[in-house]
Length: 144
Image 1: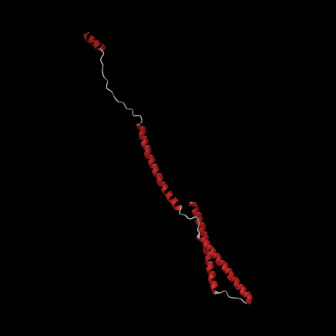
Image 2: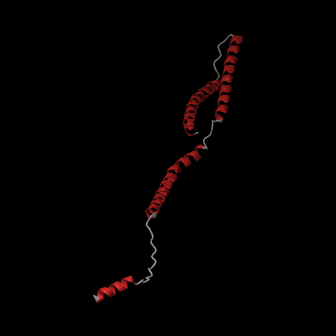
Image 3: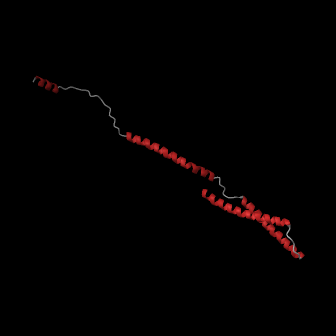
């Protein structure tokens, strides 16, 4: 019984025990920070991909700015061609007037024949130019 009394005596005694302080960190937020890092990496990848995808478009836009709005030289060509056609009509009329005054048939001068062939060539070239200008305008319209 002696042990029993000794145990009771020691139980009733107040003993002060200093507990050690422990720092406890919870793992809250670590996963979120990890996901934020993955999200940032994915964003940078998409951003780079988008920049690379836009690069050809930026080059096209830059090139399209240099596309002219109209072909100015055609007007001069057309006007001189019209002058040639008017002069041809005048020359033909001069020959007809001379034939009526003289009462004889006058052969066309060789210079007029050469000029007529040149006029016909220029008229064909005008048709070609008109088709090409129309084609250019349709194509350029896509990029403006």
